[in-house]
Image (cartoon, rainbow, N blue to C red; front, side, top):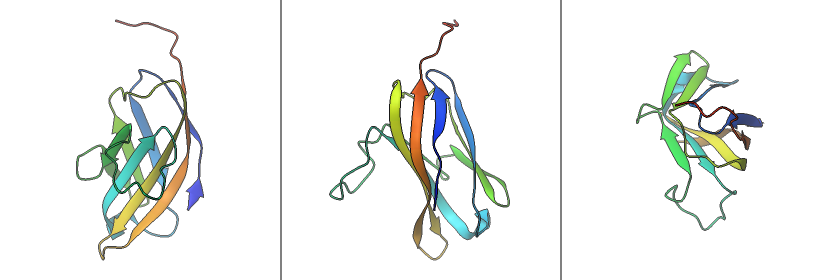
Length: 114
């Protein structure tokens, strides 16, 4: 598992490539990209309280290479500040692994485009 901190400008569409080291995208049948305001307690059993949860099956995540995925979200509802994210994947045999996690720093946008 890698720890990678990333940044984003509030109000912009989000697009980010994530790379995997020791496997290929074909080895996984589901991938999750989840953003939260804090790391969840062990008692939290699902992602309903997450700020956003993107998956391979809902089309927000695409395999864009043999060892990379691209997460794309149109103007996510993230507030300015430090958030937490991870990328988890499920193998075709049902095992789940956290591939990447880190902090997502959201900065205020300056331009008010219309």
